[in-house]
Image (cartoon, rainbow, N blue to C red; front, side):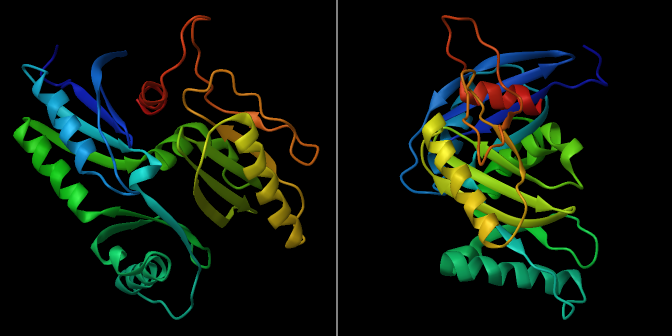
Length: 271
């Protein structure tokens, strides 16, 4: 390997398991996974401990570390445009207030990031626990790696799979095994983001899509094109929603006798 091409390690953190992979050129190597236990939504300590265990098992580490967070570790909200906001600091304070209205005082210890939208448009905001970011930074340093990114899978997957949709009207459903998140856009503007716990079965996803479609109809909106990404669901076959058949994005391939692994599918999608 050239010294100009360091290894890139990729960790995917889920609520019950962590996956570690390494990118060398065009090859993505599976470095294993480790079980963890998250007691509550946002409980990240067990997942970081599992990642530390996996990194210790990799001798001769060098290069970069990118971390992808499952929906269990990230919180989302929509921040509407306000003419009263004139600086980035005011925008950040406004976004934090939105999170505190939803999650209470717990949101005071979260790091925020907002999507870069044009003036006059709502922004998507994501919040991640400051303690999680600090622990990952220290873990990477101890492992001899440079932490280059920590990003929710929702954003990573959208950037990889949905770029052609930007500017149109659509509903994008990310269905991880234990949580799902809906993004709705119209005329190039974000209009809704909703997260919920639940199964990623066809029946459960159909209920989510029908419910969101009904909400859009109550607001006198026209039907939306529907897109679904369910990492690890090679057999995904969602029924039509209000007469429109959802399009499955990034569906994993698996041998007939082998069930796809959701965390590995997530690693392949973003690597």
